[in-house]
Image (cartoon, rainbow, N blue to C red; front, side, top):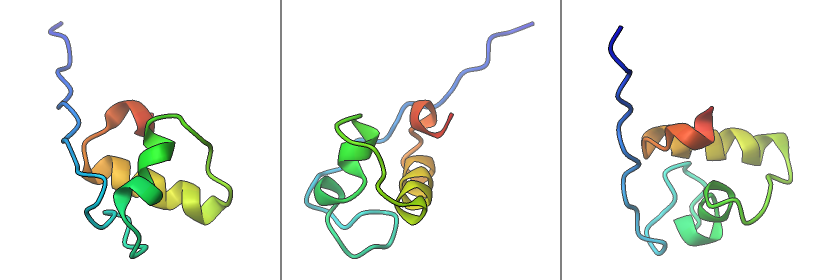
Length: 63
């Protein structure tokens, strides 16, 4: 059975708006969660970070 190839995460500039739709920059919103620098403080923040990880093809974070 062939190995499943997962797409690489897309590079995303820290100053661009976060894909989660919060209105904040990626570096001040979901970026730190994706890099493992901190954990989500609320369920909403967790779900937004999971959505933005999905949008950026960060399968390691979504798992």
